[in-house]
Amino acid sequence: MVSKRVIHKYHPLLFMSENGHEKRKEEYTCSTGVAIDSFLCSYCKSNCKRYGFNKAGKQRFRCKSCKRTSLAWYNSSTLSPHFDNQIKTLVKEGCGIRSIGRILKISASTVIRRIKKISSAIEPPVIATGQTFELDELCTFIGNKRTLIWVAYVIDSATKQVAAFNIGNRSVQMLAQVTEPLLRTSPAKIFTDKLLQYKSLIPPSIHVTKKYGINHIERKNLTLRTHLKRLNRRTIYFSKSVAMLHACLMIYFFG
Ligand SMILES: [Zn+2]
Image 1 (cartoon, rainbow, N blue to C red):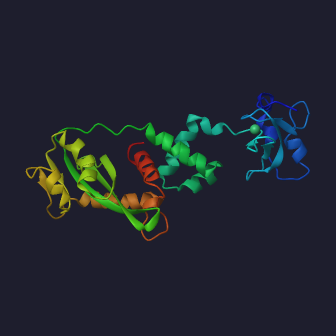
Image 2: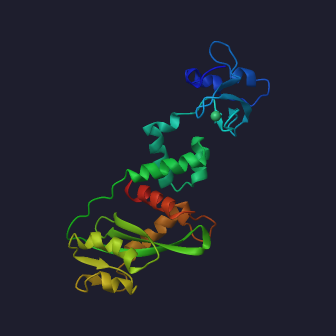
Image 3: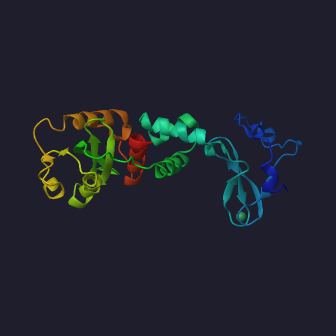
């Protein structure tokens, strides 16, 4: 019986799988040549026995008393900051969660966890005062194609950078989350479409709804739909949850 603490000292290469049946003994042999048949459960410290292999070909173990399964060794390379940068780049290039998992050889659940962690550390930029803005909404789906949702976002007309965004149902409360940070910076003008909700949110003196006023942001909608797979139109790609859509947009806009 080998304790889990000792197993962590083994060289990772010894655990690399070549998917051969006869290789199994060597794969899980430690540096001293002793095959690992069991180790202590990390939950209840009972004895664990071999219990098949995971998708990547690593040996799984199962606890005899609590029945929970675990691996003898976990790939910790996903914890490095370099990995976060790779995930960020792939999100910005429009890769889906599963394609990122395939490229980086990590599971989809790890990708989801990392994306949420990366996005939670991102701060939206400070909005400059006295600028002109364009505000528009982009329609997409959540979970299924019967559930519509809108991404309302605003760009600075001069720099074309996204200043703020929100996801929801185009209600006054939802759109207020986008307009309020703008109004605090005393903007010169805010261009929007003719959506009625804006009338109660933006003072008439700075609100413009004229034709061609939101050309730049309309073009940005196309760029967004091209760059992010989850926003592609007429495909089966859409986000399963608002949280993931929000996290990916945080990385795309501000990351
Ligand atoms: Zn256990």
